[in-house]
Length: 86
Image 1 (spheres, rainbow, N blue to C red):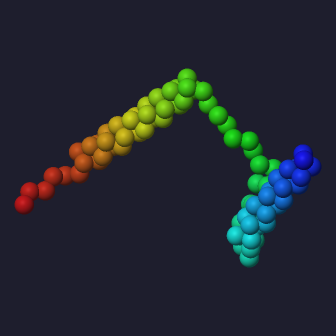
Image 2 (image 1 turned 45 degrees about the horizontal axis):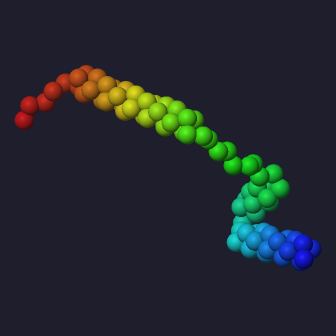
């Protein structure tokens, strides 16, 4: 029974890989990328709740500071332009 299950699992994997390669057929760059992913795929990285909280806080701080810098740069640029009266 275990041999039969293993055979079906292997067949399923082979069919999935064949479909993925068929999807990129003719595109050499995509074919190379797909082959590289199949042969050297990196395992997914999972973060615990504390790491997720830390990451989301650091992303939030980064983009908040970035927007503040952009606003300051725009304000400084507008101040340096002579005002026009209509």
